[in-house]
Image (cartoon, rainbow, N blue to C red):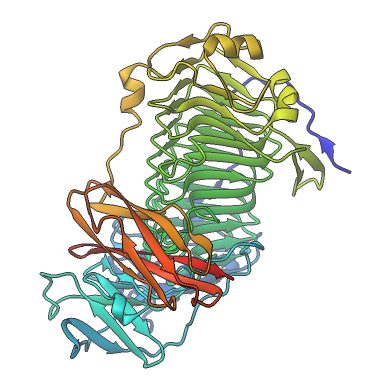
Length: 638
C-alpha cells in the first residue's frame, strides 16, 4: 500500500556520498599497447607492446583474476575495436587502462573507407558499395502512444575529415554536407563539404555499435581515453557498465556517437570526473538504479542531434538522465546547448546533492526533478537561458518532494524560472532499494538565498495545475531571503488558487503563502548573470519545429512552424521541403529563407482525394555544408 513521504526537518549540508576508491598502488603488472608499432604476438612489455587494446585489456584482466593488479598504458592512436570487460564484481585486483598522453587515444566505432567513386548523376557526389542491411532499429523502450520517425531509428554515420554528414532518407533529399544509404541497391552516397580535397580526405563510416561493455566489474579505472563514432541503436550506449562496483572514469570523452554516451546500470561506488559526453545523437550521461556515485566536473552538452531530426526533443533525450538514482553527488556538471532537457533526475531520486551546476541554452528545461521522494538539494548553481521551446521553464518540479534550492541563480528561462507540474493525486513511486512504495507530490519545497529572475513576460514562479494539491504544497513550503525580479512584469508569480493561472506580485505572493517575508523584488548582481553565459564550441545552427505530428481531415491543410536558432552562426538559411510521400498534396513556406535566426510556417495542403494515412514530410535547411533536416508527420483522416 502506498504511503505518503514523511518529512523530517534537515539542515542542508554538502554531503559526499560513497565513491570509487581504487588502490592503483597495487598495480604491479605493467602492460603496453601501441597501435602503430605493436603486435599481438608480442609480450606486452614497453619494448614489445601489444597492437590492440583488446589484447592488452584481456591480459590485464587475466592478471587481475589471478590476484595481481595491472596497468595498461596505451600509446597515441585510433583503435578501431569493440571490447567486453566481464568478471566477478568482487575479489579482483585493480586494473587501470590509461592513455600514455591524455586525449591522444581514440576508441572508434568507424572504419576508414577508400575507393569512393564519382556519382554519374551528380559529380559533386561520391558513391561506395554498402554491405549492410541494418534497417531501422527496434526500440522496445518507446512508451505506448509515442511514435518516432524512421530517421530517429537509423544508425548510419559518415564523417569526412571528422566532420559529420547529415543523413537523409532519399536521393532527392541530398544536399551538400549530407549522405544517403540505399540498402536496396547496396550503395552509399555522400555529398562532401565543398573545398575538401576528397583525394586526400579521410572518410570514416561507423560500423561498430558498442565500444566498451562492462559487466560485474570491480576496481577498474579508465583514464584519458576517448570513445567516438559508435553506431548504436537508440537506447543503446557506446560505453556501458552494469552490476559493477568501484569503477572510476577519469578524463574520459564519449563524443559523436549515434545514440547514448555512457550508461551505468545497477551499480554502486562509481566516480565519473573531468569527463565529457558531448555531441551524442540521443543522450550524454545515463544512470539507472545506481547508488553511492560521484559525478565531478563533467559535461553533457550538444546532445540529441539524432532525435531532433525527427522532432523528438523529450523522450529519453537529455544532457544527463539519472533514473532511480540514490545517494549521489553532482558537482560542477555542465549541460549546455542540448536539443533536449539539460539534466533530468527522473523517478525515485533519493539523497541527491547537486552543487555548482551550469545548465544553460538547452532547448527544453535546464533541470527536471520528477516523481521522486527526495531529498534532492541543488545549490550554488546556474540555470539560465533554457526552454527555448517555450514549453516547460527553467527548473521543472513534477511531483518532486523534499527539494531544497539554496543560493542558485535562475535567469531568463522562457515561460518560467521555477515551474510546477504533476498529476492529480500525486505519483506512486517504489524505492528500488527498500521496496517501499510512496505517493509523492510537490511538497516540502525549501528555497533560500536564490536569485530568480525573469525577462519580458517570463514568470519567476509558475503553477497552473495544483488546484486541489495547492494546500499541500503551500503548507509545507519554506521560502525566504530570495531575490525575485522581472523588470517588465511585476506580477510574475502564477498560482492556481483561488482561480487558475492567477498572477500576483511579490506582496500578493507573500500574503497568499505567508513566505518570503525577508525576500526582495530587485535586480541581481551582474556577477550572477555573467556566470550564466557560455559560448557554443562550434559554429552551427539548430533547425527545430513546433510539432512533430499534425492531424487533418482530407481536403484541409496542416501547418508547422520551423525555426532556425543560431549557435555562433550568422548567415542565410535556405528552406526546402520533400512532401512527395503525400498523395495529391502541396507544401510551401511562408518565407523560403531565414537570415541567421527566425521562423517560417510550412503549410501542407491535402485534397479530398488524399487517402487516409500517416505521411512523412521532410523539411531541409541549407547554409553551405551546414545542412539540417527534420521529418514530421501529417496524419490524414476521412
